[in-house]
Image (cartoon, rainbow, N blue to C red; front, side, top):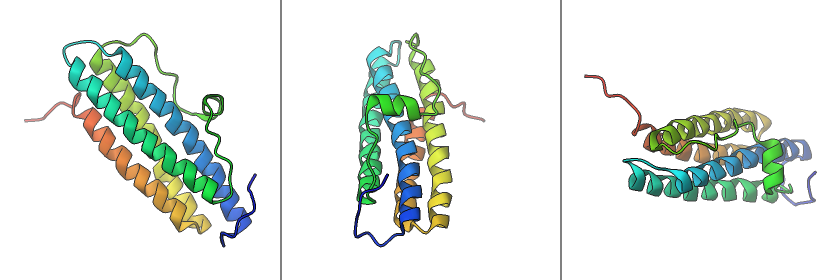
Length: 162
């Protein structure tokens, strides 16, 4: 569903972009809750560093979520931003509630961040092909930021070759 707007993109382009943005809104909301869950439940020798890192990454994801939601409403869409909508729309694996070890959290979160980044990267091509360069730019911005977040996470678990 799209709301009337003077945006000059065609209805079909806007509808396609709105649907894709709502898919990513669900992913980002889910990712944010995973990060906050890890922030609250992390234990171990890396506690303070990871506790603070997870909170910082959560704040980042809130920014990406807002950018995606605002873009889709600017196109005349309705942001499906409730927990229920996110739970129905996410394609991320359910976060294991039993994890407490810091590096297990990092491993799981890095997989989720990588999955959202991969999906956003694919959305760049779809929106470019549809003729919506501005939405492609939003997905580019989100992908670039998620790649950096992934780097911060993976730095804790990567082995260095000599």
